[in-house]
Length: 314
Image (cartoon, rainbow, N blue to C red; front, side):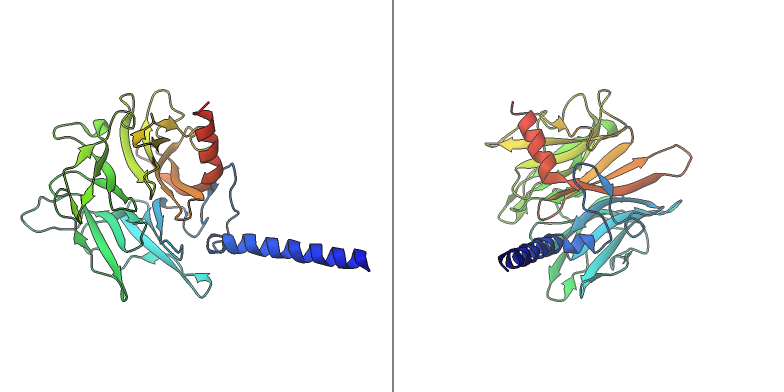
């Protein structure tokens, strides 16, 4: 009898633990994915990651809404969205703000979940030169508002892949006036009383001189680390992902994220799930004049970050 009781208790505990693990990742496993560990896996295969070209994914803090970029063959970039409704993810559909002219890409929901940033080439007024600009939409009780362009100091300069920390500081790709595109880098703008000061280029510990095409920074909500991509002769492929840690307000020299992430293909556009557990990024192959192939991948970021911090602290 004691053995039967003990076996029953153990069975109950195993079921409880299993259900807790499923609940912990339920929003993501509903997409039919295997939860990754030390090997990066395609995310949302045949749903989010398809035969098109997908990159730059972002989640609401509750992880019940997501946005990502998709570029179909011989088409422009478009932002798609999905929502978790009654325990089921909706099919990907174009975001409500899709323009009639121009295109949108690289969405980012801020850590508080009340602002959605994205890049767009949609028309602006006559006082602002045309081209790529950053727009944002605010979330209220009725949903997302009609997007408007960011104001100074972000107008009339190149700004791409903008991400926000919890306190509202913004990090993004930009370049100095007259610089070649490959010599651009990671920039930031600090918020003070809901306004932004001058745009500043981050130091060479992040903007490594040996890296070209430094771009697509993801800033941690607490600004404890930043992840971005760049191209180097000593790297694994066309573009690799790098990480720098903020140690007592001093940024460490950026480290290559290594072979768990980087391959002979192009890795770019990193983001981390709001719970801090998973790193998402694009991996693709580019053949000039031929079809671009690329999907969104994900990997256990907690384990990866712990290994990188340990190796680089020894």
